Image (cartoon, rainbow, N blue to C red; front, side, top):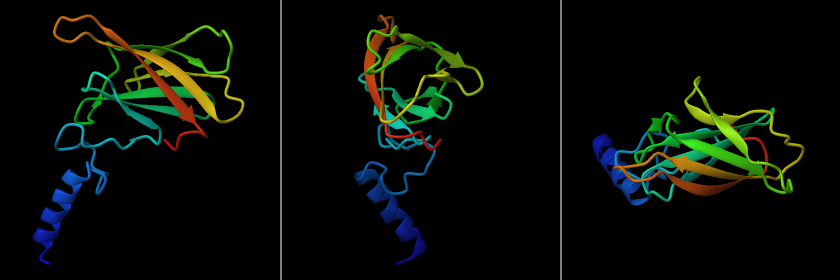
Length: 149
């Protein structure tokens, strides 16, 4: 098979499998084709069917939420808001995630992670679209260890 034919076949396979083959590209050429974590975390497509997000848990108890558009291109978290709590922590208050200007994520530091698995419940408020009201969605992140970031 000629090299350009191999590339064409690979592109078709990528489209059929939703980006599973050759998924190392930074963003997909079609919306919602790439659902691979970019930072070794837990990846979701948001219920608004536009945004994607990835939660990562880092040593030292830092939790970050990376946000992406429908083509899995990174977007800054400005305009988004999030609160969370560690599951199993009883009636612990919700903790607010803050915008990290260094990388554009929503983040919180110094979570009391003492053992795994760790389950985090996160409520993310998405900015309003087309004059509508902001929507808050629930996401459950489960970690068996720190993310590979």
